[in-house]
Each structure stands twice: as C-alpha cells, then as structure tokens.
Length: 466
Image 1 (tube, rainbow, N blue to C red):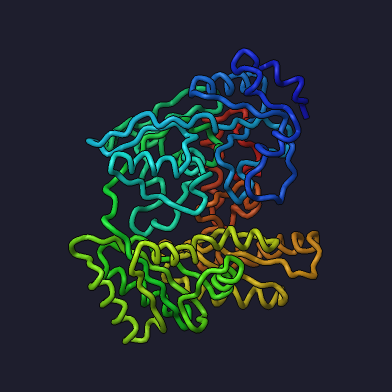
Image 2 (cartoon, rainbow, N blue to C red):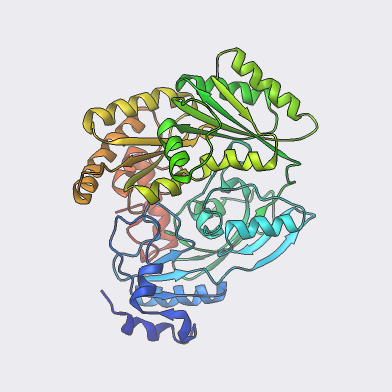
C-alpha cells in the first residue's frame, strides 16, 4: 500500500494543499459509504472542482497505476464507494454548480456533485420538476445516483434515473474526456455510450457533469394508505390503481414489521385502529381527469371488493406528508435502532406475492430467530430485504451468518428470475454473487468493456468484479 505522503506530491500541481486531505479523520469520513461491512483504508482524499481537475487527477493516476474510488454523497449500501486498499478517493462534493436550467428544452445541466434535493429546488425555482426522489435526497449526489441508476419511490411513473439522463460528461480510466450525447433527445448514430456509464458504479470512469430531463410539477398530490390482509391482494390493488388512476406516481409496499417499527420509534400516529399483515402507500398526482373525488371512489371500490381491509385518504398536504413519513423513515429508523443486513433485490412484478412467501419460509427454516423486514417499490418489482440482528447475538456471528443467508436469498431470487441488485449496485457486497443474475457470457462482455475504457483497471477496482 502506497503512503499518503508519497502520493500527495503527485497532485500538488493540480489542487491546492487544502483540497488534498491525508488526515485519518478525513480518510475515514470520505473512504466509505453507508455500508460498514468492509475495512476503510484510502491513501488520501482529493477534492476537485471541475472536469479539468478530474481529468488531470485521472491522468496522473493512470500514469502511475494508482487506484481511484469515485465518491459522491456516499449514501450507497453496497460498498461501491468504499476504499479498502490505499486507493485515492476522488470526492465530487465541491462540484455542486447548477450550470443551466432551460425551460424551453426542459433540461438542467449541472455538475455531478449536485445533491438530489439541490436539483429538485433548482427545477422548482423555474416552475419545473425533477421527479427522482428518495429519503437520502439531502445527501445523495447526482453523479452517484447516475452511477448506480437510482430509482426511488416514483419509478412507476417516471422510471429510473436512466430515463431522465439526456447527456453526460465523463472522464474515462485513461483520463480522456467524453461528451456523451450533449442535449440531444434523439441520437441514433451508433452505440449509446452514455448508457454504459449509467449504473457502472464508477468502474469505467467518473461522471463529472450531466444534463437531465425536467417535467411539469404536479398540481397536487393525494396519498392513500391501505391495509391489506395478504401479499396476494397487493397485485389486485396495483392493477386497479393502474387501470383507474391515470396519474399514479407511487405504489409503495411495507410489511407489518417495518411499519410498526417506524410508528413505535418515531412516535408517529398510526391512522389505523388495528394492524394488518401488509400496507400499501399509493400516491397520485392531481390533474383535471384525476380529482380527489375520483380517487376516493376508486379506493371505496377496492374496499367493497375486499382487495383492501382499511384505507385512509389524505385530506391535506400535512396529512399527505404524515402518510409518506410512514414509508420514508423506514430505512433510517431500522438503521438507527438495529444492526441490519440489507439487501436490495428485484423480481418480476407478477411474482412478488409468491416470492415474499417463499423468501420468508426459506429464511425462517435456516435462521428461525431472525426477524426480516421487507418493504419496497412494488410497481417495478424492487424490494428491500432487511435482516435484523437478534439482540442476544454477537455481531461477528451475525455477519458470518448473513453471508450464508445471502446465498439463500439469492437462490430464491434466481428461482424467480430476479436480480441480486435493483438500485443499490453490486459494489463489494454482491460481487461474488454476480453469477446469480448474469450469465458467463454477459460477465465476459462487461469485463471486455471495462478493459477498453479502463485498461489499467484503476477505476474503482474490486467493485462489480472480483
């Protein structure tokens, strides 16, 4: 492992001394994402402010075969932004300029360090709307969101972030700057290299700027919380909502365990007088053909047909936020009060009820003392599987068991032709399980693409591939 004192002079002509961090506190802070399963040992931290800075850094690292870990808001949960072996961490936190909001083309051009919340506010200032949203909006950065193809709660209407990206500026593993697609909405002149970098987890290069689509803001939002008696009812409700709500924007699922933990630890008001096996939070935008009276009638129909057992329809923006808090605070609440092993998987939407039943049975047979909390985005088949450590179990035993539990979970995922990673990426956490989702031929092609764009293998080494 090369020492920070040896590496720091290599970047002195690129960045001022105050943006080359070598102290232990900074290395620990910038050297990991939210997943704490792996050791943290970066050599130093670099804080560029422009694409030119990033290019010069990568060129220097390429020349000296120095490994790089790109770093955004580090809100990931797969170890994709964790430096374990003396890498140089390139943090984009100082690249937070919104360069242009164009109302005519309805696009925003910004640096990759812009946070999701900052982007949403910039759009709102021009009476436009950036629809990608999730609970870490204040910390998660656009470049990292693109590098993991983040989704969030409104994928059912607006798609993953891939569907919002128009153009990218990237620096490859050789230090070459690529301007990919610019502001073009249609460009069929050869391969779409832009899409290679979306979801690539920093293994092909560093995203430094992006041009993203904006849309019209909703005129209003109604949120509806439903209690359901079993997993099978979820798909019936989804079908009804898709058929009857033309502006359906979210369809979120929560099992009873995560729901009750949020109510208890956050001291939130439970709008229901009794508990249910599962809950669905529906969000619909208000437009001329989608009035509050129409929405209420749809869920009255669902109740009469026995699809749902109970329902609350928001009657104010404050109540709508209260209902969203029941879903929005789950991940943070569980992480604060428990030691958790998290998994982010996807299965075909139509397979969700059978998968959930199979998953719980399989884990219960292998680890009868474990509690499993599942929630997620039903509309796109994305489920977050959280295993809670028993209070009387040592951490070491728990983490060792979780590795075995992953094999069990991913075998169930494979049985339903799902994916081991829906939106958090592969990172370090799931690289040994890539073959559960990808064929040998696919993996070999992906390695070939990396060899072209990063021939020395310096970009986020050890992520995705061992």
